[in-house]
Length: 295
Image (cartoon, rainbow, N blue to C red; front, side):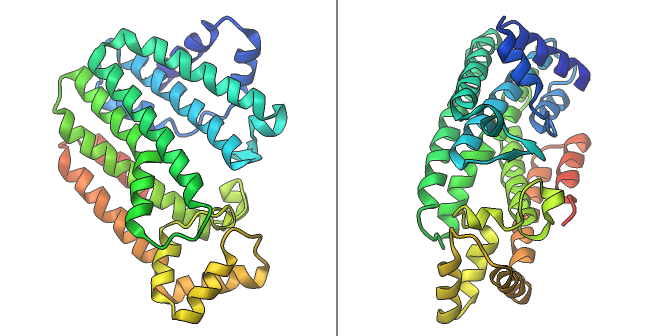
């Protein structure tokens, strides 16, 4: 099933008929293919399921290329990013090509699905802008962060589930809720992994989000549990390279105040709501696999 998606992705890329694009795309790491798996589970058996899955994966790949340029990330999934090896201009142009190919292929799936996915990409782009703006200062507002998280991460997963349901003539609203909550939980777990996993597991330094200026949920929870002196200290570390002592202090305080456990509890709550929304054991398994990522 997933091999058919991989074949379709390569077919779409090769159809661009520019060998440099094909070569660059072949250097990208495929990742978990979460969105494609959702399509194939929800719209199982539909003749256009493979195309929808491939298109969404192209769009997701494009968003990651742009994201790496914005974040100046040198590593993606444990290997050098395209902007690190080929430069930011090439990474942006490759992202543009993949976006364009995805959208031009998307119209073959009808107006409702095309609008659903395209609108989510607009929201995703707004979320990226908000993420950059939030990184300029320490954000202690949980709602602001979760709103940004929805736009930057969950909206495309929500659109994936909704569009697959539209394709299969299933209840689009229920599947959209599933996708939304899966996306939020997925990113919260990623936030946690950035804190508690080692650099080898992450493919990047631990606590990297905070160094880049991102105040993810565990930091927000920690901030509100600290006294005035502790809050000032935490804010002073925001967006800077941390010493071993500073990192150790953050981790110690998070352990004391159970910041990670509280973040996981929210992810669990959202995941339970997603499970309750759809009566599909295979989709429940996707949630549980995501929640059980080791940290």
